[in-house]
Length: 261
Image (cartoon, rainbow, N blue to C red):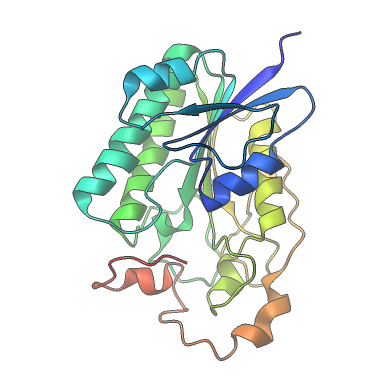
């Protein structure tokens, strides 16, 4: 049997480096991609270099691929032109290349900043209307809508993971609701890759937080988070983060220009 091949874009990023290790499994070939030489590659991995604007390179990179995990993006607020070029046009290029190459599933790295203007309590479901807090969040709403389109029109399986506050440990008060630990993040993406019969799904990527912002997290994938931000409640009690009552925190401020946590 031909081994399954998984393409991971944005492999040099913080999340990409974590998943490069976490998604390796016996019988699966990892193809790691970024704009520069991939730092986290193992000897058995395939690697490729391309820019998300290079459609010819994307067409080649998706050949023989069963699953794409698309992380490559500007992961903070930036100018509209930059966001549009990378997070909107670039994401379209990935979906289009994957569909033409016969890829079965795309796992799209979205963000809780698609719903950043909602309060962290009470918990929200994945069905609430988007309320993005930045152009970055807007671009991820576009990616989710694009995934819905490619599923409905072409039958591509799509899982959109709204990644929460992906940091080693909480350091802001809002993280008590939005945190996802490194090991839970790996576990979630493993389920997004391996869960059968997904069709199309949007899931909230958070840990098993007592004050979780998510109504159901990603139970439909069989995801079972293990960590709870409540263990750090004393550490964040005196944090001076702005707008801890909102999912997006300081990113909801009109003058926010960058420095995402």
